[in-house]
Length: 41
Image (cartoon, rainbow, N blue to C red; front, side, top):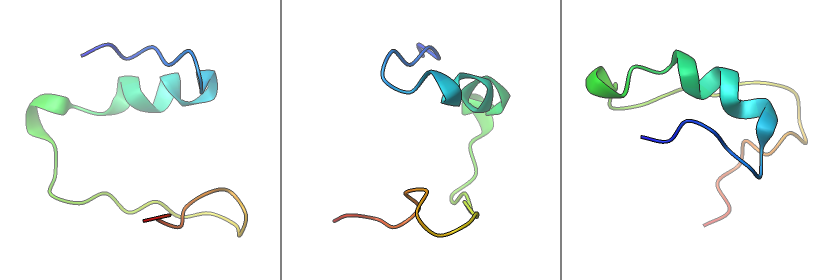
């Protein structure tokens, strides 16, 4: 998997920490309002 994101360069460190060979069935993302946690679908 390509872990470099040209659109969101700040996420590169997060992507490097995820073990994609042993990915959990869910990931909880938390933080303050307004950072884009809500699913838009």
